[in-house]
Image (cartoon, rainbow, N blue to C red):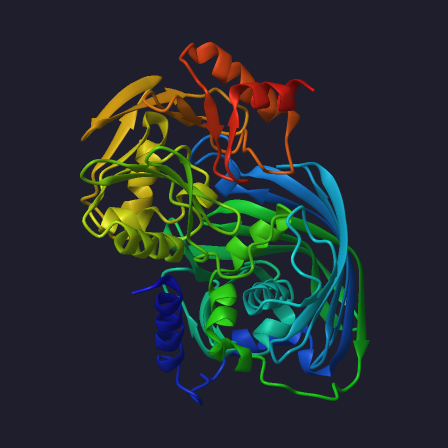
Length: 490
């Protein structure tokens, strides 16, 4: 089953489990809560200005560590209820490459949108927005406007074991709202999403500093979390509420019937985190799967932006890294079977714990492929697999150095000290004198980080092994050692 199909099935099951017209009668307390929030039906237009920050646990320095501060942003937003949503972004990235990006987005309730300007160092095409991106933006829009979301609530049921909490359905999604015991205003709203590495995870937003504007209660401080870890916080410095009667009352759930939109909605945190890095990955990342031979029996497997390394054996194959998400790994396995039908995949090596290089791990583990990574990341990956229901994977960790002999090839693994990630492994093939470095140096990649470049060169010199060629997991092709030195020391 491919990843998109899996998410579509999840969506359909949720939809079928929700009765179309079984709205529970609100308790008197719940009626008072909605009364405290104000009448969302009288809102014609919302405007707000925001200063905020993004944090990414998927890019933490150490596995399972605190999310890295990836970017700060200013946002001017407006929502003509029932009609267009407009965003004007001023994004300052701190990681991976410091820069500034200014662009605008417009979203329509039926699930279309446009983007104008450059939204990253690998920018999305100006023009029509990809459905997955629209779905993720719409998810965060509704989570950020709890008064409007709760006005769509159906099937509201108190949670007995959690005082001041209610389960409800809204926008074809199941939510839990937790109320502040004193103010009876929403303190947090949560739901579940699909994470490539961990499977089902809780996503939530916490609200504070509620303000009354034109009789409507709105929060000025918001913190978004995934599995309890902070991914976004924002302060709404200016909020304007225009009352009236919306001219349109569209069905906001109509777009969820499109698989890619549903994927963006059900995996919103992943898509938003990529946009926050100024590296949006809105389109399907499972394709292309292209093989570039870089040495005898060694291939770079090209994707859109994230690559594997393939090592051919006399009786099988070894692959390095599992980028992006399971659909990508499924596509790679299919391509391997077509090109090398008599050579099974014998081993997977993970260079580090960042999700964009390990998000497709579960596919290989399910296929029974033995997996090797740095020992400091082993428990992290074991926990991720167990959370996805995979408890019998063969997962081994190595420390500062290790030698794997698989069939006719020797593969050396070396710990690479870098600020990018703890537990980083370099992969060295003595018979080709070729070294794979993940992220910190990639031949053919335009964007570079000076610190990582120098860490790469330092590692190459310190290893004291005969290196003639260097290959990366981005960019394309190889550099000779002299090219690496020239590029870094220029």
